[in-house]
Length: 471
Image (tube, rainbow, N blue to C red; front, side, top):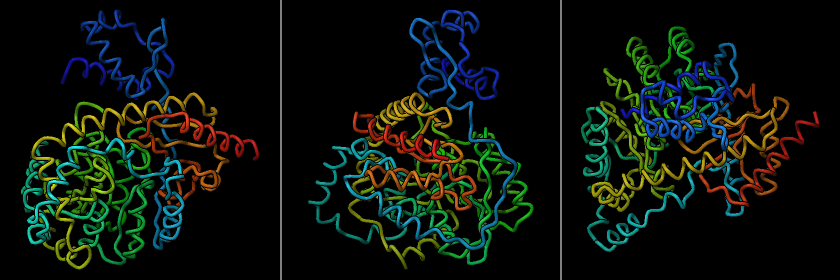
């Protein structure tokens, strides 16, 4: 780890634990260099890294100050564990997804990054070459478990993170959601108990409803994202068959759980022999220099099914995902042959060429850079414009900003009024069916903040203020 990273991490810890307060001035670059014994350049790099994460901000001719970006976490509350034996959310999700379709809708509610950022000229060239090759249309080499060379490349990427993987462990799927659904079907049956985070990607709720599962929800920890105490209580109290968790770049909130907590989650899973389906579709969209580990790294008993996809890095059209299935590989392949059958063979062949010649890593570096810049612009604009009763949360990864509204403002009402003005936003009842706190919104911040988007954000802010003042 670089010296600047170590200093940045030390200061970040002081900010997170409250030792450094919001809007408190940091030591100047020169003073910090004297305190730490580091060079001015090293200190400046550390401060710039913290500023990029919105943990500190600079004032011209004044210095650096602590931001309130993560000092005000989603509100602390008593342990709220919910049992949901009958889930009805598919109708709501269907109506929502239909409403945000169309080029005229400003896509703050989209689940995908800006398509302009994901477009790769090189990948399109490769696609063109492959489509002219008759052999590329041969389906036989791409039937479940999928293209061997692609599975080999994915297995190599696991090995680079210290996770032992073999191509036979990998099953190629039609996107991450397909991988998640197949994984859940391979483990759980109607009436089984499944554990979900209280706020989670709506596909998890849809899957639980479709399979007739009983859902126990775990609240987010206001500081660490994942509540270990609640987790341990739940798995000791209920006969949990499987957990479906998102621990890196969580959707919708955005946090990434620390490696220390991941290790403790794995230890508890091993003690109680509980399976984990890990939704890690945003794994490549981190902002720092180090990629967060998946739960598969800590898996000693083959209890983790790790699911991811290329769709959030290369675009919705490249809906090619996978599951590190291990011992469930054969079962998942059987289920796949009864549903999606096979993933597009041309896409699989194109990805082999694109990844094996290192184009993918170059693309990821550029994508992460732009997502970080755009998200920070959005956050600063919202922080400046929103009334004090609203709080946007910034986490250094992904492209979602989770925003707390005044408690008397219903996010569904805001969403409905915004869609009438061709502005899409994502209200919190999409992610939390208990909806005991429906005053949150998720915004997609992957777009360059143009004047048009600023006007759309201003319209959203005006709507929030109107409802705040009307109650």
